[in-house]
Length: 114
Length: 113
View 1 (tube, rainbow over the protein chains, first blue to last red):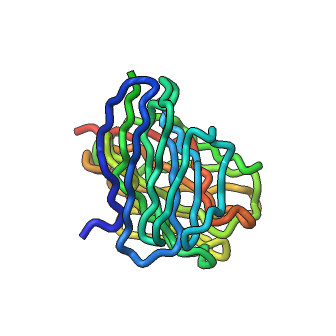
View 2: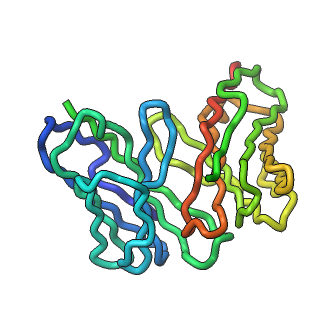
């Protein structure tokens, strides 16, 4: 069983389009995250949600809007895509308030904006 | 602001060698440090998690150590195999950080036959 699953795995789109990436976890975790891995392979936190509530918003342009319909899902919607948005986006989950538990990551979504 | 650095950035070793990857962090107020493996085009696989109160953790041929006061961790891989080739990332969960992980820059390991 896949613990954290993201769709799609690959996404190629034109500048100016709006796109969404979906994430689901079946681990029973209450906290989910979006991380961005840039062309230099550096991973950085974007957002964190706990039980559908936004916890972390790391200075991300407001073209990026996360949405959490329930604690098992955290989707990422991106408006007016720009070339610089090209990256690999990773979803992750963990248990909040229990910092000594592992975070689990999805397989990533490679977004290419042309 | 927490910063995490990994050295070396890349490492190539012959099969069978023991090797050490290094990770350093600037703020010692952490809950834990986690080592991940990333294969090309794939997601992150958690290898080991060391709690701030622990000094080391072992899993198979992997041993991770933590010296919180000096802001350092090492990942020791014994008897390396070609299948160990991947990028290794360390990440710290800082206190007061809302459970987010701050990642290092990664070490790209290649184990050659």
